[in-house]
Image (cartoon, rainbow over the protein chains, first blue to last red):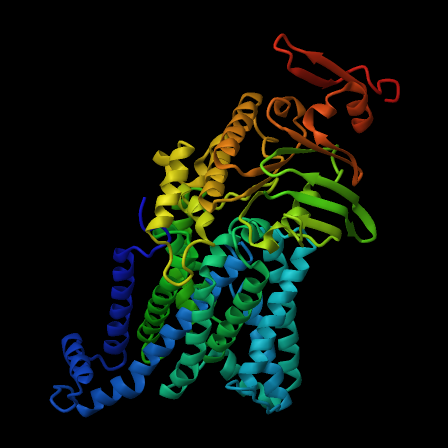
Length: 343
Length: 261
């Protein structure tokens, strides 16, 4: 018995390798292919500060620096955010099926953002813009609604899931109604909902990164508490845990992460559910392992999915959610079959 | 000495008294059986002593006013009635959770935490199972795992809510005996809510008896071992025997309440 609750070095190495590979794919593949070796060389030279001696053409450099590199970072941040938020929700709700999508928090973020857009509200609070603020509050309200409905219905896995589905359906209906009533803004809302991974650059990376960093740090800080919550609330208290505080901080940060991710990429299902589970089954069930590895693997998964989305029907693009579900769903089904009742 | 003294301790849920003005003193290091019919408030009493639920009245802990054992930063192990068995957690991890308040929040478990866990696992004959998943344990093994967690935690109070309810009668006696042995070795106080008067009669030294939220009795365990008292407690006729070794055996008589149904 050794290294309880510690990330196995091999798993960390492979996850990072996965992230690097997804980065290379994302940079090399696309409408204009760039040779892998030259790309590596260029990245090394860039790190060393030597910009001039590369074999790449100026156009290739521009494609890498202004187009594919920020897109890779953004995809990785969205994937990491959704996966970490999913792990956090699974932890606080003590429910392996909790994820930003199923709990309705993604739908809540969508409605919140829609309301802000149609009402032309201009508020900002601290670093939040008005749309992000609306999305965050929407996500938070949705999760709390799902939790409250399910708590009076017995707080089982099924009841939380069912109330999440009900909340999501209701909020989506509200959103559709609001959109139909506001033809003028419909373009802007759709743009927001479907996501802007397509058109985004370093600015979006800059906006998203601090949110991710803070929320990840908070949720990771509570990883030990989430492990205690796998017992019961009372046992957690007896062992020195703070269940209420944990719930408040983890739900808030997971909702914020979801809202920001949704604001950048639109509604992407499945990532927050699949990634933590794969890690749980392949590496270990402690949240001190799941949360950091979810960030890395989630980032790799989403940026790879984005690359596929760009490449498969190039020069057109598939919605990224299609790819995540297309790869994720069967993969998850296989894992579920192999898990033999350990979920 | 860690005596617990309660004076007029009450708990209300929606204007209904679940515990009604209980006053008692529990001596330190005792094996306390909390006894009473279903719904008499046993679990709530354990939870209020622990500090999980708010109560009215006074609780003194070492003569100091207290809002529950937890509030006084005294290590307390609690095993609920419906034990959650975490999926995917190994026995070693489960016992290591007992070290939470001992280990460093940022840098994780240190060598002494591993030593404490290994010692606890050895004491409960679980060393060979440390990498096994808790979901694969039998009822008795799972209970030993909870006790190992309590030892790793260096708990001074062990609060158990009907821990033997799902065990066969051989495992019940085994586990009560083990608990008694650990108690004398590690000098903690055991508070156990239970229906199993027969198995405890040889080991428990203190009884706290509740009915409908009120205290019927607190004192030496042997004081409850009579037909009249138990008959009144459970509203039934009691058959009371002693075996050759003089150990009392109590049964609800099959003759009781027959006319009513």
